[in-house]
Length: 277
Image 1 (tube, helix red, strand yellow):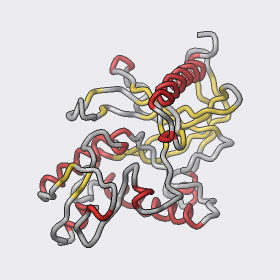
Image 2: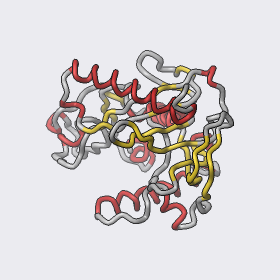
Image 3: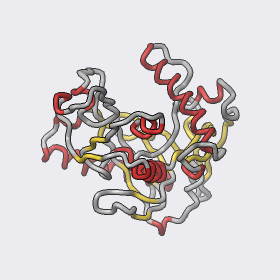
């Protein structure tokens, strides 16, 4: 937002952020899921409409026609998901933005086969590259960056405030529909190879009394305050989307994390290698 405002000639534009690297934007999987095209509520319809506008920006980037984001930040990849489930990319096929889905069987070559899967094509966004290039443009435009936590709009002296993101975004905007999610995922080390870096998987696996998420996305590096220049990895395997975990105590969060990581490891082993591993 700050970059676009500055490029359009607005003055006195600045960015306030609690941290530079410990942000969800650096950690996201990068799978473009604009919607199913069957949304029935106005908020979801508006979300899908905005996402389809974003698709045109991705198309522009892909063909090297964006003013400051290079074509290496997006690429089209196959996405595999259960054929009977909604994945959130169906609207791309509906508007002929991507090829029709194909019914496929997933065979890992080790005796593990998953039938009744669908192969979609959607964009994969390399979020680390996007963030690096955005920060390069911020520095180029000399946009001031202030490290601070905004707890109230009264802290801001500017006439116009763009509340773009953040855990406190819902509180600041008094939007009761905003909620937090806690995610758990593994980063694969470089010894894992790169055979899984040219596709995406987003599915569910029966575990206990319910179906749990399992996903695989390409990821080449992870950036944190400890590794601001990036730490090499070879893929991302997850995961969870746990709502309102911010109400838990430190001890409860630790127990939750231990449990979820163990469950994730178990369902990944079963999906890729079978129960008898």
